[in-house]
Image (cartoon, rainbow, N blue to C red; front, top):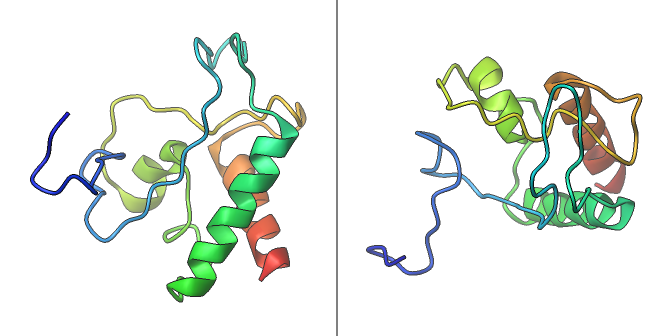
Length: 117
């Protein structure tokens, strides 16, 4: 795929400008309900490394840690009011089955980011 700027990759519908996307290679074939983490579930190592990357970016770019500035695809529609096309990631954590729902996963992510900052 070629874009105007080859360093740019769209990641969230109508929420890319001024944003940074962090992704993990996991959850291929995952289904939200009934939950199935797919052939390649997110690992604890991936989750922890993503948190470290997000914390580094937040620190480097002086991004406050709020539910409107650091969030998952699953939170965009609710937190930013931007209609999405059914992206539910991250609303379940295979490494933590008790954490269920976009808000719960997002809160867990933000809490961990704050701990690292």
